[in-house]
Image (tube, rainbow, N blue to C red; front, side):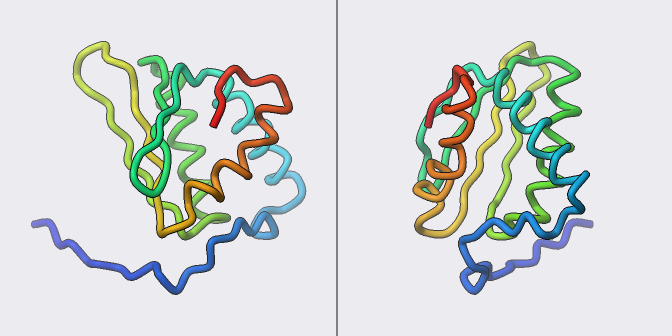
Length: 121
């Protein structure tokens, strides 16, 4: 049995609260996110967010699970859609949310551009 509960996130502020992490957790999250996004093959705009394309590798799936788990803590306004097919097709991660999410993500990921990541928003 599947029960769908419609949650209204419109009252959730469009903000990242890194204080939910201990200093060690925060450092680990930033490092693992930087490494993960170094493997992005392509980024494209979607309604109220972005789609990220990753290689179809087991290690990436594990890293994406960790990323989503951590991001849900610090950015509760984000919605995550992970698409993994049974074929060898690339993995898609969609980060979306309320109006303004695209602009927020563009600003948040500016540091990854500065760090030399090949993926750009």
